[in-house]
Image (cartoon, rainbow, N blue to C red):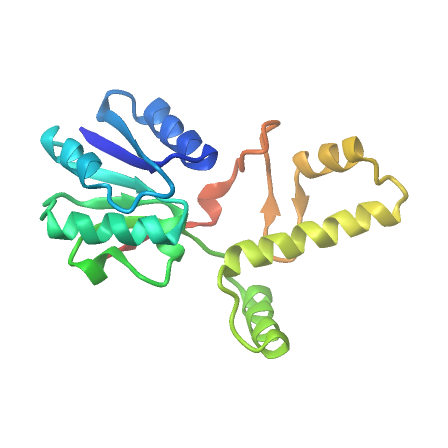
Length: 193
C-alpha cells in the first residue's frame, strides 16, 4: 500500500482523490498538510507509521515541497517518493535530499517545440520556467484567437470547441467534458531520481 501526502488545495485534493479512485485499496491513506505549513513532520510520521511501501507527494507550492522533502530525508523515511508533474518541474529534485523514486513529467517533443524553446529564450531573455504549460497555453491562445476571428467568441462556443479537442502546434489536445485531458499518456514521461 501507499500513502498520498497532499497539500490542502483543490488541485492536490482532486489528484489525491483520483489516485485513490484509480488505485483503490493500494492507496492506504490520504494525508493532507496545510499550504502555509512550516513543518509537516506529523504527517510524514503518520505515513511512515502505516508501513507503506511508498509515498505519493502532491505539492502545490515549492516552499512546502522543499519542507516535505527535507523533513522526509531528516526522518529517513526509507520508502520511494512518487510525484506528479509539479514535483518534476521544480528546480530541485527529491534526489537532492537523498530520496529516490520517480515522477511524471509533462513534455512535448519535436522540432516545433524545440523552435518554441529557442524563440522564447531569445525573445524573453531566459528559458521558460514551465515549458510544457507555456507551450500548451500558447496553443490554446492561438486556437481561441482562431475561433474569435470566426466571430464565434461567446463563452459557450469557446468551451464547446476547446473541449471537443483541437490540433495545436505542439500536439492534439483531447478533453473530457470535465476539462480533464484524455490523451495525457502522449505527453507524460517517467523521470527517475
